[in-house]
Length: 203
Image 1 (cartoon, helix red, strand yellow):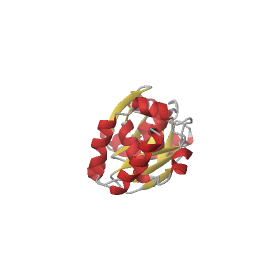
Image 2 (image 1 turned 90 degrees about the horizontal axis):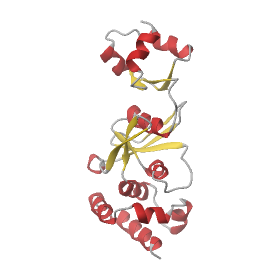
Image 3 (image 1 turned 90 degrees about the vertical axis):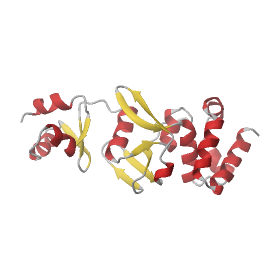
């Protein structure tokens, strides 16, 4: 098989697994992957996952990759804050939530960090499309709850260190939805931290 044949099938699927290849090309010779990596046509994200190197690498691509290489997962925490313009800078680590074990992958594309949640807390995400890439990302309300839940924000200094854009937060958040999502955590610790956050916002 030539690379041009392969690319013609995967040009609309810029990142793919070995399983994806075998569905389209049964009996595919994996030695081609080694050959094409050496030639710079494709690159490995992590074991078993690859991407076409002529694809533009942007935030949407990285979010799509985060969903793909560790599934099920959705982008959340600081990465979602950056997407919603709640923090002043882009994040260098793509942070996500998964029902799989907590994991971290240091790849040629980026670092990908995953927090484990039980299945009952795997909710509150939407499917966004940007730059032709479709990816799962937490709603603003769920991203905030995920962050407060995982990051152990127990005092205002830690909260101020995040440099949240309070005005954007107030304008963008649906407090009724947040409270409904918060109830599903059934966590007194989270409730305490959220009371601190609200008192800080409306001080």
